[in-house]
Image (tube, rainbow, N blue to C red; front, side):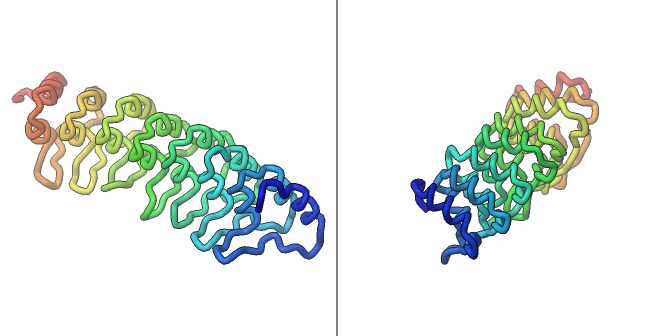
Length: 261
């Protein structure tokens, strides 16, 4: 559907017996083509049709909202679709959820549109076995500013688990996202002693990857269990010593929790 078809769309939406949900061989509807081409006039006209299915997926399960988050610069289309109460914001396709795709791209403007939308049904923790929650997705893609902004999303689970059973805290330490860590630790309810697949806790990961900044942030937290043994039979001291980094051992020694260190 071409961008110069504004008047054709205007004529068609006023006709009876027009099936606006008709799909091509790939399952794509007129609405999907309109948002892909960045045609705001045609989008508005089609949304006026009461019998149009704004969530009709193609063969890959992708809805018009999926196509809008793929299209660079189609922020207005995302905003317009989210304003329509018929739009389902959490539908999953073979490529993930709309918000997961936004996190993968690290698009701050799209994130702000989702976060400021006048809706209560947006799941900021949307995930499946194949796709991580948006917060972990942003961290894995090294979009630290995006992850920091997402921390303010309503109802966000700050202890969600993915990627070898890691929480955002553990993943942030592993990836050495110091700015993200500073913001994350401002929030209450963080689980400091959660265990990953091999029983490591956050402080163990910090010592193992030689994350000095993260280690310092954790060691001032009384909730951190310094005596935990992981499934490999190691303690945080073992991880510190095996890091072969004098600064890691020095930082742990300075915390004053180990008299024999």
